[in-house]
Image (cartoon, rainbow over all chains, first blue to last red; front, side, top):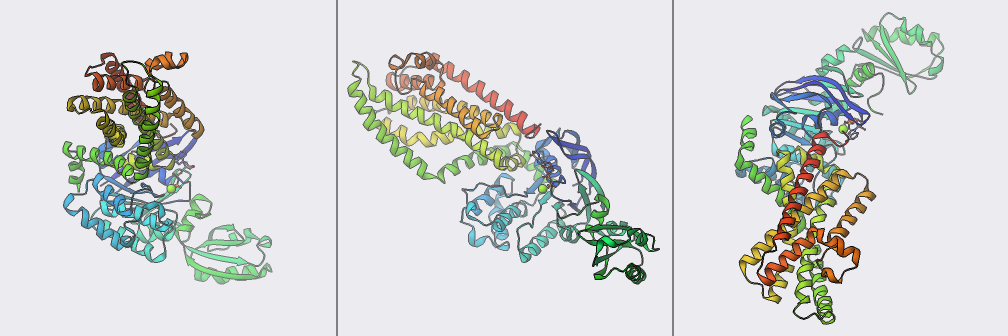
Length: 310
Length: 263
Ligand SMILES: Nc1ncnc2c1ncn2[C@@H]1O[C@H](COP(=O)(O)OP(=O)(O)O)[C@@H](O)[C@H]1O
Ligand SMILES: [Mg+2]
């Protein structure tokens, strides 16, 4: 299903959580929403899901306006919340079975689907345990399971692998991809670029409530000036003559943070020795130097002027 | 895929969703059975020790204080359990659980209705054992009288649930919320004729008492079970209360939840 955000703004008192947001999510794609904490990802999702009312603008889900047909919109969306949301007194099985029932999973398939998902995500052994007694990682698995059981036309995962161990993370990624293969539209909010990069067909980068960049992961990487990055850890970053480096032919842009110098370059193999030579001319020692392809982190750095993970 | 959405919107499905939501309120109650058991025990002790003692002290001819007090206690219990829904909703709002509930495929109107009915049904389930004890002891076996009493108790509980939901969504500070509900409980329950006839109350309380819905309901329930008569004034007052509280609750709920928390 297609989802269209039209000039969406959402304020909480004097905080502007989402600002003039325009985006079309295509039917059947996985759209990554990448941004640091506080970027507005969760607010964007919950406004689309009719939990919040837009302050200005609107969202259309499969042609239905969240303001005019909220109940219809709700019936198309399933959300795995960022912070697990379920009754603490109920058991894992009761939480998931109730969610399946209330979201209209047909009676004939409900029991088996709940069981399958619980088994795959390692919840079968704890199915009778009350949810308040679960660890953070287990709670997250229960939260993700809701959507895997519901299998809605629009599936939303808000930081689905936070608190999960590596193995479970990979499993959740696989299960999200399976949902895509069934033709569902998927929104994946995350502050982890590897997650956005591995799963998403396209990525929307958000910062301070705004859309700052949009494209496939490789498009975004190529948009980084030069497309390659040389990362240098100099022995003494204060003494470097940055302007001299900026004048070098292959250097497109640069940034310094935490004593590390990032140079966005073209033809990195050629640039690398020239840069090393320039540094040694300035009497600067080099602790380490790497040549890499630009990552989404670099994209973020370039567009937002700050680091993604703080 | 669109069919899932369409199925959900059929009326039959919506009824099922409402029932599922109501069942959630009941299930949480059943999950904490010690509350019911301890309340039940407290009730038995209270009516036996206190009511029997008092009915000896308050020896007014033609007046059965034991029955008066026992039925009053049932009503007080219904009212306090109905107030609990307010605490639940407040907590759901604080913990973000409300976000989840609001994302489910239900209309807001249906949601408000299901919550009020769920809270009221929960209080009914809660007091049924107590009610049965009193009915058994006093020989109230007329099914029609009992059914009418139940309807009135249900109405009272629905009204209080609606009120407590409104307070929960309007008062956003924990201390002020606790105080507000405590004051309302005081007015509804302590300043009512549930446990003592108006004549025995302190002057101020006696003047407020007739306006308490708990007064109206307990007097009406005693009238029908004790004398087989309908207390029309009480029933009318009760109906007015329920309708206004549900309207208030729904209005605040709709504004609040459609507007997000801070709009
Ligand atoms: N319910 C709320 N009430 C008030 N402010 C909120 C609420 N939800 C989010 N915010 C604020 O809106 C901004 C965006 O938050 P959020 O959408 O949670 O970002 P993200 O999910 O990207 O971390 C933050 O400044 C946050 O403090
Ligand atoms: Mg978030």
